[in-house]
Image (cartoon, rainbow, N blue to C red; front, side, top):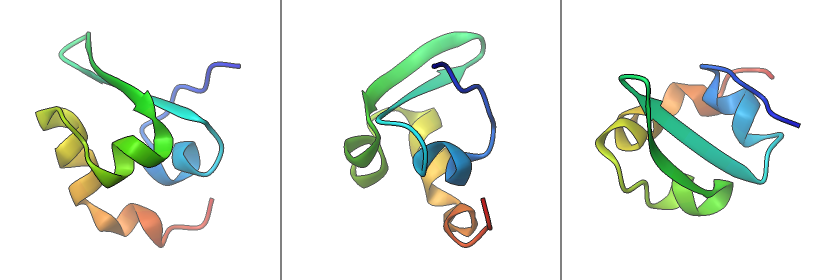
Amino acid sequence: MLLVTHDLGLAASRVDRLVVMADGKLVEDAPTTALLAAPQSRAARALVAHRSWMSLPC
């Protein structure tokens, strides 16, 4: 299954891998726990930095 969303909390609670895109290009592809713990790309770091996604009901 492919889940496309801007809701990081929703994605993180439901998928084994996260893929991050920026400017229409794939910039990071990693296991969910690895990406959330240590994002490598600028776009992934920006997404993960907004910790409010952790408290939103999904």
